[in-house]
Image (cartoon, rainbow, N blue to C red):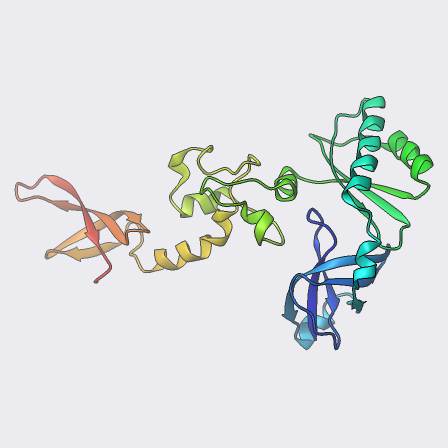
Length: 266
C-alpha cells in the first residue's frame, strides 16, 4: 500500500492516508475525512507500506479527492484569521490567561475552529472556550504547541544566514538530544552557538547526525591502540570532520607527546 503523509497546518503532526489511485505531488492540497470531520491538508511526502506494517497499524483512511480551486477559496482569508485571532487574544486577556496565541485553523467542513497557543505550563482555558463558542457558534479547540512549532510557523533565519530548515522542508520536528551535540563535537561551543532562534538545540544536529556517525566509524575508537611510526600509540581523541585522531606517543627523549595523525589514507 502506498500512503501519503498529510499535514493540516504547520504546527500539527503529520498523518497517513491511503493514496489509492490518485496521482499527487508534494505540495498538492487534498480533501480527507478524519475522526473530527472533513479536512483539507497538504501533501508532505509518500511512503510504501509492507503487508506486515499494514497489519500492525490502525485503519488508514483514504484520500477523498484532490482539492479544487473552489475548495481552497472556501478557506477563510488572512484578514478573517487576523480578526478571529484578535478576538481570541482579547478574551484571553480578559480571563487573565498567561498564554500566547499564535495561529488559527478552520476545519474544511466549517464546524470547528482550533486556536494554537504557547504557554509555560498547563492553562485552565474552560471559560475562554465558553466565550469563543458563544461568539463563533462552532466547536472550539485550543491546542498548546511548543516553541519550536512557533518558530516553524513564524519563520526566520538561522545562524547560517538561510531560512529556518523547520519552515522550509522539515516535516516532523524530531527529538534533538544533547548526545547528538556531543557526537558532533560541538558542545564546547556553548548553548547559544548550538541553539536555534527557538532556544532549543538546532535541527541541524538531527539530520547531520547520521553523517557524523558514519565518519566516526572510519576512525579508531578512543582508547584503541594504533601503530604510528613503529610505535603502539593510544588514541586520545577523534577529530571527525578532519578525519584525524590525537594519539599519545613518546618522544626521542622519552617524554610523553600528543600527536595528531591523519587517518584518511590509512
